[in-house]
Image 1 (cartoon, rainbow, N blue to C red):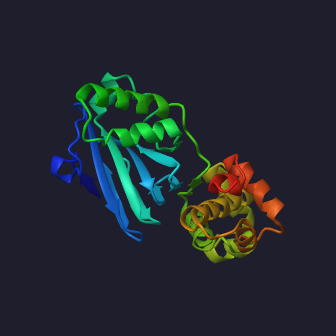
Image 2 (cartoon, rainbow, N blue to C red):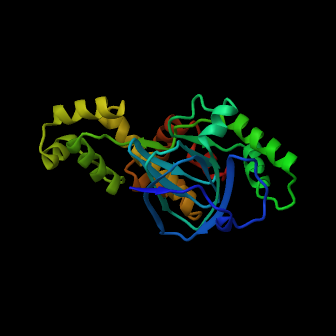
Image 3 (cartoon, rainbow, N blue to C red):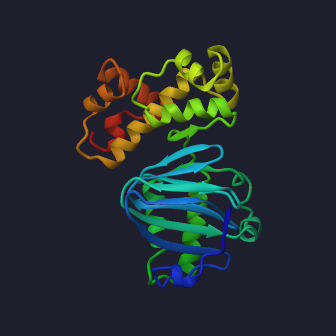
Length: 266
């Protein structure tokens, strides 16, 4: 496993100032690139100012469209897949800084953040080359305040660890538009439908049916985030829903919004 060092100044595109213990890194990545599994000694907030990415940890798969960011604790293994051209803005936090600033509580696990307009502007403003030290410190504190109020698990697909259940989950994720039958899946991974159903519940805290719905909605979010031309009707058909209202109801159940609202087309 690769342990990456603290970001160094030559990696930073802008000539910004940051407080001791906080490092700001701006990078652009092309669609289709994969950042293989690795970990950092620092905690980090990963935000795509433009584009959609997918972050995978041992606990699951986090889809991160432009109105989301992901918090990754220090020394947590993760990989990043770039689903579109990405303008990535990452804030790295030394653990000593987090503990000194009393920000460590609740930041020891990964989670996705719903990025409000205020949080978006605060993150982007941190990379302004005209920043003074005082302004940068205030912006960092604003980011941290917003971070604690913005957790959102709607784009998270938990991944089971038990080998048979994990194989079944990956079969579904490789083809989320398919109508997967638990009896067929169980035979493919060498167990019974009853055992597989029990494993999904214990490993993911979701029933098999609910987990598959979460996987389908994550696939829908990915399409909505990367393909501006796709229609809600097309998505509903491709994902196997009987009607647009049925798809919209399932989407709202997971995300709290309709597909149209999520895509910003409403």
